[in-house]
Image: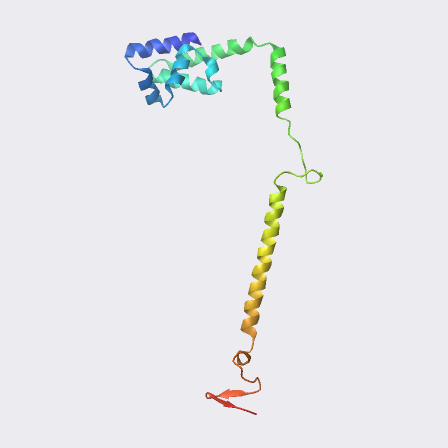
Amino acid sequence: MKEIGEKLKETRESMGISIEEAAEDLKLKPSQLENIEAGNREAFKDIFYLKYFIRDYAKYLGLDYEEIVEDFNEFVFDYTSKISLEDIKKANKKNDKKQVKKVTSPYTVEEKENHSLKKFLIVAGIIIIICIAIFIFLMVSKDDEDPSETKGINSKKEVSYGLVVSE
């Protein structure tokens, strides 16, 4: 990894490009380019991102990026092949313990955390629907009333030509 970083640094310096200028052009932080040039793999969380950063940096400098990526892949292979199987098993066990998820089904007694929110929303929805239904019922029943009852006119009276006639 250090050899790749040194090659990139030498090329950049021979072209007279500053770290800041290269970082701005590549939309990376100057510290990221410094870590690449120093061969500091640990500064990157994801080795795949590091690979693409190196590839883009090599393209930017006009180097044969495929060759640089090939060298990086060899570095990764050499690095990972030195990890013992016991270390890999230990790491897998740690990850398995951290990622234990409870499996629930609709038939289990244990409820998920968001069930209470779902229940609240269902109850609120039902209450809103009932309120709307009552409102509509009141509006319809108000329209169905005899208009003469609301004006104080006897229901047995007839209205003709604007005159009120009693029976």
